[in-house]
Amino acid sequence: MSQQEPIKSSSDLKVYFDMEWLGPTQENGVFASNEQGMSIKFLLSVPSRIKIHESLATLNILDAQTGRIVFKLFKDVVPETCENFRVLCTDERKDQGLRYAGSTFHRIIPQFMIQGGDFTRGNGTGGKSIYGSTFNDENFKLKHTKPGMLSMANAGPNTNGSQFFITTAVTSWLDGKHVVFGEVADEESMKVVRAIEATGSSSGTVKYKKRPTIVACGQL
Image (tube, helix red, strand yellow):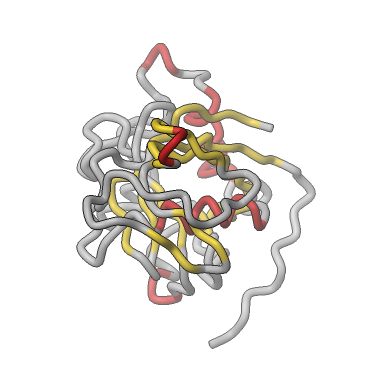
């Protein structure tokens, strides 16, 4: 399989998600959880960007975790796709209901991807772009070459809306079918992605009562 050249861009366009989720903590790639899938004992240290809220401090029981994912967008390669994502992150069209804030990751498959962006229905059947219901595939120049690639989810050719996914493995079979337009910007952000990945299942259903939620987002 041919390797993608490092992506060079004259821009420095970055956006972020501030996330909240229930799930296991991670250290050195190992997760801990309990049978109920509700809360876990604080046995492992937590990456610096992932904060822990304790509902019962004396018992060290976790209630929720929070963390930030920063994305780098390749607007020189796919400007229309990047602008759609940027606007949905910044609340510029919130009066039209076009915003990621408050939406969830509804489909999470470990060793594959985490998917979100359906802010109209929340189940993978909705969403909307800033250009209308859907917009065309811009190009397929960028590939799904590593974990952390940011790509558009779709229902077939030229059906991009607001749904997206973040890869957690190499997914080369998606090349030419889904438009890659960004990547997770740094290692700390990828730790948050991995923690969210651990809340999923082989069916894509989130194992915990509350889905990972974008509580705030914007442009850096």
